[in-house]
Image: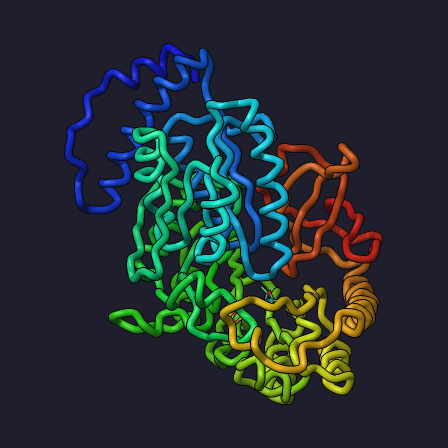
Length: 484
Ligand code: 5AD
Ligand code: SF4
């Protein structure tokens, strides 16, 4: 944006009192922030830039798109290099301890950069900010941070930013919980052709190792009409694939004034003209219904991929994890899904080293991996999260034992997923073209319905299109192919 344009924007008058209703109130603050930014840009003699760095899951990635939408509306220009940006926002994750350590490490580095750039601003948000000890540490040891907010009031970003710009002081606003969902704020998508769509927020499951229910609050489902309206708008704007997002999508709709099931929501989404592909994440095995399996079986748009976290193969450990299913129930569910949707690709999350896990328990996990034959599995070393029931359980497993199990699990998972990936060799698959290949500029990269990637000769005009690709050569976890 040119300076001239920025200055014109700053001459509009804004009423003194903000509206109390949302989202109008936030649009009011976007205007206010825009005026401040215009002044700051005029002083700097150039447009000011921002960089949002996302840690963690798809939910956070979607939240970052919302932050970006607001920042662009205010007049900031995106700068992919964090070290060059005038305003850096860390959208944090706290699901495992090493996620927190990474944030502190990078923040220290950012603080050193800020010393040389006094006009620079730093904001922190996301799950880690919902932990009181984190905010205390930031207040004492990271005084250079300008703005701190949590997961429940992310919609107030414009208001908090305007307050920071006006006061020049550190602004901290963390809520314990909320039942509020604010619709219709600006969003800037990372990809023009695919988008995440939140269908619910929070989690009520309280798996004993997991901090998410404490930092993301109680389960709230979005109004199905608002979800459909958002997807229709996305489709009108060029989106062909959506990923419906929730901590536990299978319990969608239970708390709505007019309850509805996730399977029913999927059927409504399926009807949207122009939408080609539907994905969703994450499914909790305990809530995955026969109705959902039937909807998946019949659907032309729901992708042939299901992420079904097992966490452990031992019924004893699963009970201590408060997962509310046994190994046998999980395997029976997998059989039912595979029978209904034979070409389904299954992926999972597994934790090793949960308190009290014995070698026998671990063997049960390996057994599940061998029986299910996952396309891929995210494997995690158990991380103690204070405040969760598992953190105070006895028999925490020694580090060397966990590492050894982790390595054995990874080897097994990788061996099987290479075999599972290879079965598509020679077939023709419909692929959504996503980007140019990072390593070879003659190749484009596309994603199959089952979430596998294939690289094939092509050009950028194909991005966002669905094309048929023959899978010529399997290279472990991806294919090299050719458009047919
Ligand atoms: N330690 C290790 N892994 C964890 N996960 C959640 N909490 C923990 C923890 N305390 C993993 C689970 C979950 C994934 C998103 O992160 O496997 O499915
Ligand atoms: Fe955490 Fe369990 Fe909720 Fe997933 S379902 S977010 S693992 S508490």
